[in-house]
Amino acid sequence: MPDTPILQADQLALRLPDRAARRLFRATPHIDILRGIDLSLQRGETLGIVGESGSGKTSLGRTLVRLYEPTGGVLRFEGADITHLGAAALRAKRERLQMIFQDPQSSLNPRHTVGRILTQPLAAFGHDATPKHAAALLERVGLPTGFAARYPHQLSGGQRQRVGIARAIALRPAVVVADEIVSGLDVSSQAIILTLLADLKRELGLSLVFISHDLSVIRVLCDRVLVLLGGEVVECDGTEALFSGSTQPYTRRLIEAIPLPEVDPAWLDEKKQDVLF
Image (cartoon, rainbow, N blue to C red; front, side, top):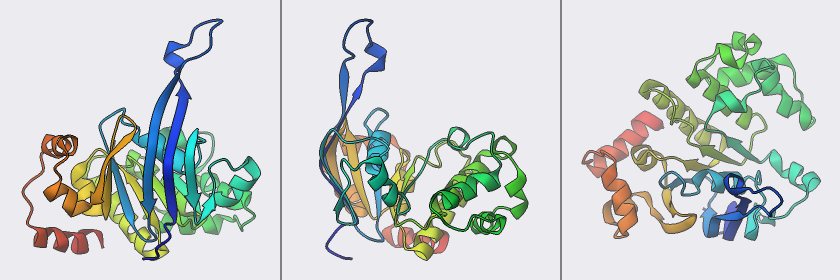
């Protein structure tokens, strides 16, 4: 892997208004969501981000794609500082930096057909946005081309998530941040989505940031794992090193709280090849 990360954060910080504590005629207090986050994502790597609810996982993901503007630190993408890029300059980066959201029901416009949802990003960036391109994207994520005429509410949760993935890869990005994309799905739908994501990573040469509370998924899918607690990095290590040798108490509690079976490393390697790749 190249020495220069494709995505890098140095002492990244995020402070947001505490809307729950808003008071009339008084300044709105703020909460420090992220505090001094250091992370790096190498080309072709999958970096897992884990932590309990409220640890800052989703906020970190949204900050990495600049849906939130950092209030401190530096964020670099493909070697360029994007920490405080203006709207016009940031738009030029959007083709290469995409996000798949946790809830496809709310992230897909209910008034638009699937075909329009998929071709909008192409049209916005000056690419050919014909129905055949929507059909090709649907086929790539394993959905019938006829789904282009449907609306999001006419699809199942797993189908909507595949549309979300298709939209994210429409512009052939270099980095995709996937935020809890299987958390609301049944087991069979989870397997379909994870297999699809692994296939796309290989075929498109993607680098992934995979946010999840499911450590069993993280263990199979990710090369390295970053553990968050209260908006701070507790630990970051190779996946197997973290699962088998972490001495950090919080990390150990996270691992022990999930009903993970004892897995032989040789079997795990075989499953990674047979199931995901």
